[in-house]
Amino acid sequence: MPKILTNQSDNAIQQVIATKLARAVFAGFEAMFAQFLNITLGAQSRFEQQKYHDVQSAMRERLQVYEREVKNVSNAVRVIAYCELNCPQTWQLAKNIYGDMLQNHENKPIAHTFFNSTFGAIWDDKKIRTVHLFVLKAKYRSEPRSYENLVSRISFKDGFNHAVKTLITRQVFRVSFSNLDADLQALQTTLMAGAKQQCKQVYELINLNNGFIEYANSLFFRNKACYLIGRCIAKNGDNMPFAIAILNTSKGLKLDAVMMGADQLSLLFGFARTYFMVDTDQPARYVDYLSVLMPHKKRFELFNAIGFIKHAKTEFYRYKVDTTKNSPANFKYIVAPGTPGMVMLVFTIEGLDYVYKVIKDKFSAPKTATKAQVKDKYSFVKQADRVGRLVDTHEFRYLAFDLSRFSDELLNQMQAQIGSSMVISGKALILKHVYVERKMMPLNLYINSCNNKALQQVMDDYGKAIKDLAGANIFPGDMLMKNFGVTRWGRVVFYDYDEICPLTDCHFRDVPNAQNALEELSSNTYFDIAENDIFPSQFKVFFSANDAAFNNFNNLHSNLFLAEFWQGCQQQIRAGYLPDVYPYKQSWRFK
Image (cartoon, rainbow, N blue to C red; front, side, top):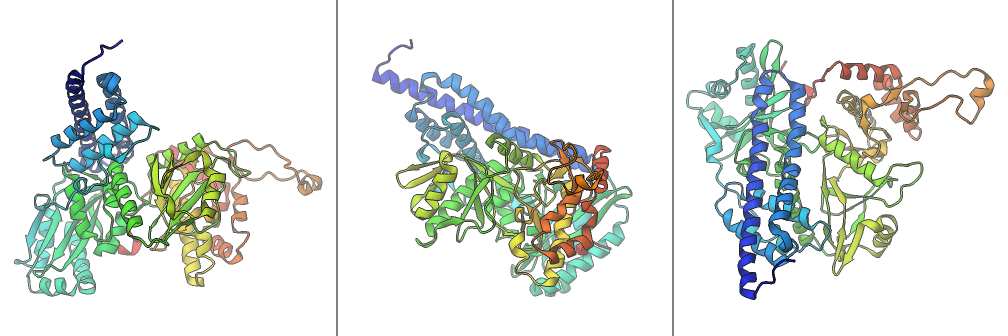
């Protein structure tokens, strides 16, 4: 039995324990950040050596760092805290001490999130009050800071072409460019044409040798490419952001494309892409800089893009609360447009570009998976190379909503379908487990309202999406059009993950020929089917409701109905082949 202390002794021990808790969490944050950075620091070397399988392994390893360190710190904290572990006052004091320790810390916002994660891991399903978290108060929200030490500038005084050449030759690689002069000419011409079309002030000052190029000192690495991020700036402040793609080919380095303007950059930083590796110990300032280049992007989207996905969740929660608070009172949560899912209840609210997905208590037939299996599928997607075709998700536990925003009809539906995952407490509806995804137009709804040209284009991209996923060793499982969405760029992405799996786990077969007419006419299957057997010739049923969609798809991607195609993909994957997937349009590539 622990010794019973006096009130004075209680206060003293509480101070000691709270200080130790704060120090333990701080040490864990520093350890996490160091591991994250160490993995990131190898990005350029992996790019130069063309070790693209190592690139994917490093990405997966970096995703594990945060959760692993939260677990380590949680275990240490349980020992340190002992009988004060579940004392709210001790944790409140620890939070205050921790906040003081971070007062001038470069990465204070991310460190705040690490404390929140540790506290959440300890308290789990207990009632957690935001008073114990660094979340909503204004003082926890970082204001944009100077990013001057993260960027460099090159004047146009010696001519625009000279400035562009200086921009590229300042980048230091172990590998040489194979044909730098030709690449530079293509880049200079394209940037000039882009400025003329997108930013007249920049274009005019380029021709007057007035203005400058600003660029991020750190390169952005992802998959097989490296990206140089910056902008052309006129004296009056008008600017044109750009991202230059650099590839490492068998002949050497090559400038492959340039994206210009905030909209084109948004494709590069899209929500269906895996995360960048950026060599910086000042990630929040990089987000400040990227926010200048892409002002329409939310901060949580940019933190997510550079791999700080846990802090992105904190930023998203703030965005969610602010959006709801500032929206009209008659904006209510509704079931998301589209065909209702058999596994998930999906809802959204007007004014928010995201949907909430909750696993149902009971799945509709013929779904036979368990909740745990569905969670494993979403975890699989988080670890996968999403190749621009899988929507990223944020997983939340105990996410609170304003109860007044739910209609009685929706509440009744939620009670019936996800009752075990929700709690109503006062004025709040709390979801014990929920996924957040970007809102999109479901493909099956899109094709009902588009013209013939758009239908052909989207069916082509539907097939390309399936093939891109196959090349990344991903089989969607249920490829019905209701499970795919269309982005504002007209790009098709997949978002229903309850049947997703590695392509190499599947057994693709042709349907065996019937031995006689009796077998052929039988309503029962006349051949054995194993659990992982897939029959591509039966994929045509996905188009049963739309002949025009099928005809367009069949003209462009009929090989997807052949087992031979899928078997060939598996052979390439097992041989170690990684396909080239570009986060920009083919037409943007330099010829």
